[in-house]
Length: 121
Image (cartoon, rainbow, N blue to C red):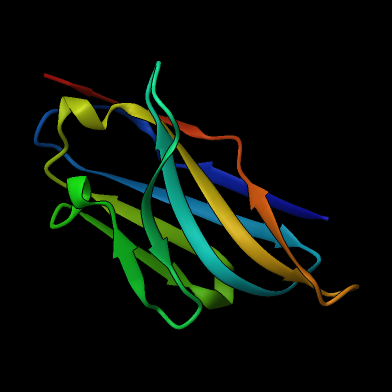
């Protein structure tokens, strides 16, 4: 009923920048929170950044001051601007959207397929 698609990953040198996008489509009445998670090989998935429908944001300590999350409600899209990238930022980045769907007026969590970010030293 709802599809979430990430894009923008790639290979970048340490100190470089990337911008990830997350677009949701389908039976959407309202998107509540939009989150970016990441999972490095052998590690658990961790929350990187969150943005609420009102624009409030939260960040993991490891990315504060370097990453910025934003959203365009008209486009049902969230962005993650990543600056000053480090090798330890290498991971698959996933978007999660908490969506209230039209037909039931209930909220559900939807995940994208992930996009690989690799930072070389």
